[in-house]
Length: 264
Image 1 (cartoon, rainbow, N blue to C red):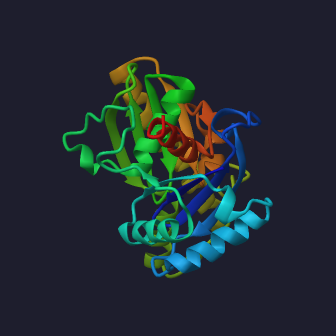
Image 2: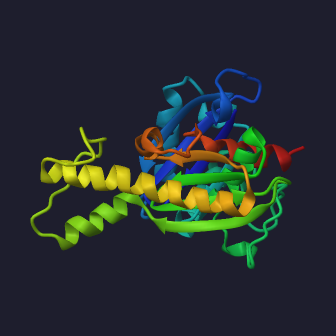
């Protein structure tokens, strides 16, 4: 079994793949189970081992004997170090980490390739594997990332905008009379209450921003595929005019591909 770990600034997603399984569609092919936990900088390697064992127990997979490979992408160096320590102590395999020196199979055309986040590379690799190019990946995370892949499978660059949740946190923190709300699509674009007005501005406002950016990318590249991923993709994609595919496990699929390329 392959254990994939995507460490984000806010949440960490783990996926368990069976290399021989063909169930599921898109990025979920071969995915046996997945888990989402809070990203906690202070969590130790031993605490991670306890959590991973507990999660694997729900699928009757033994952590010590059945995990034959691990792949990680992380934007949090401290957590990456603890995960390496956990794997080195409890498992016999060497983790594949998306970082300089690891074979990804995708040229990075950034001015400084080291600036590109590991999750963005994983998403681009997975999207190109599934849909070819040119493709734009929209990742709804702490920031809204737009990653652009060429027709020939090159990472061209992209754009980064503030994410939905941190934008709302800033709004609630600066406006004393506003409170946190449930993020759902409102009854109408014309809100009839403060809550509905915030929901309208958030859902339709961010959808308009996504569509506007995608159209600008299309002006530069021509016809493009548009793939959404991340925790809030399910909220924006139904009201977006340009998002064609939603792949919740895109990053995990990219990790799986990078692991295979470095063990072939």
